[in-house]
Image 1 (cartoon, rainbow, N blue to C red):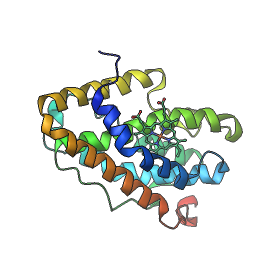
Image 2 (cartoon, protein in one colour; image 1 turned 45 degrees about the vertical axis):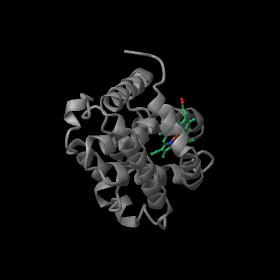
Image 3 (tube, protein in one colour; image 1 turned 60 degrees about the vertical axis):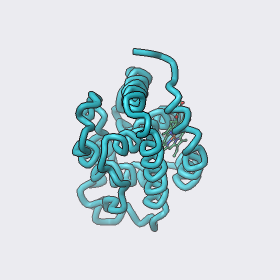
Image 4 (cartoon, helix red, strand yellow; image 1 turned 30 degrees about the vertical axis):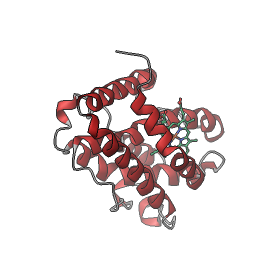
Length: 202
Ligand code: HEM
């Protein structure tokens, strides 16, 4: 396993920098308190639950050799919601998802989802004390890999690097899918926030 950061990851970060900033701004979860955190994980659940099966079904993604099962997080967000008495099955799911019809696009979508585990560690560090959440109490989705966080990120980055080197023309497709994923996430976060309806809490 290499430890250097592949060029393609730098390109992805550069191409999505302002979209990440916009995501953070729209999410407004860092200073948002408990209700905002619950809304945030409800939205993460509603985005990842329908998207993860599409990633796994993308033509050619299996050959990339990533352990996609381990990288799923919707069930963790679901467990976190249940911890707070919210029924994930009654929550809305995003229908305006990014297109995932090739391995290159799946890897671009995964850049956004896997990268958000890095942001998750930051969020947990900030919210842990104030909200009384931890990986075993309502925040498993923010810390899906425990101490293996960096290892999982580097393994993803290496797999992506290998893929793009083998098919140089694919880089633009990866970047396009990452951009689309951020845009769809932002659209989903912008939808009117009556997400935690009475039905979901009942
Ligand atoms: C809402 C509050 C968020 C905060 C405060 C936040 C913060 C951060 C921070 C501090 C990093 C850098 C971590 C590191 O390098 O160790 C990061 C990386 C990243 N975050 Fe976020 N994040 C947030 C939400 C999200 C969301 C919702 C997504 C997408 C679903 C996302 C996608 C990413 C990606 C792709 C990276 C990796 C960038 C790279 O290194 O190439 N973040 N985030």
